[in-house]
Length: 210
Image (cartoon, rainbow, N blue to C red; front, side, top):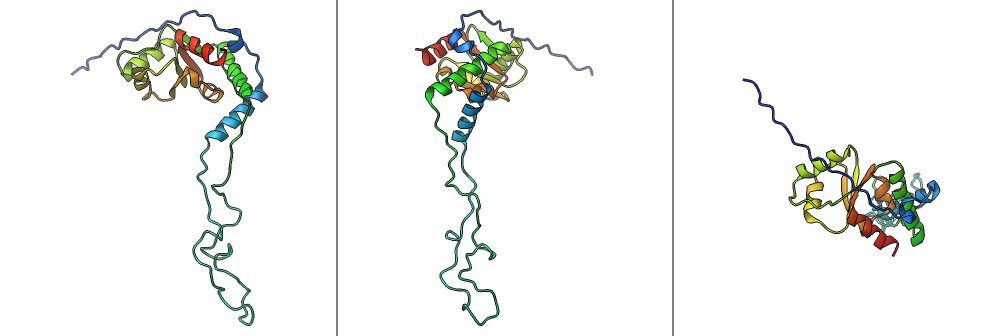
């Protein structure tokens, strides 16, 4: 019995022309500055999980294992020493480490502008009329991105919280949604494409220029 072939309908989404402020989208590249901000942001997001107990944290101790002299064995003061089995770890990772770095606001903002300008120069910035999706269906979001030619990781910048759009996008691999007011350098450079709408551009201007 021959299999019945079903045709899938592609949704073609057209980009629109809009005025991009030069102060945000025409900033020359500064690799060192962008690297500095990315290192700071990754450090601030880092969770310190690895922790090895030192000799003061392991159970045991409190009594000298054997007397100092006369046993023929090496002298020892506590069974929590790092040379004992079950003893504390010497120079191991601890949860007290701090990877956070504080950078001036204008430095982080300029790095964001450089990252956005690079998206324009590499033609990986797409601006559409509206990103509002009426039904929270992943298929609709997938066809929207396919119609634009998005074939890799993509950051979708929303002017405000659009519940249906977020629900439709969240199951797509390598697709992340973010509000325009929360835009940052690390998220921009982590994705190949950046997708927003005209209202999103206005929100970026309002947040970072006004």
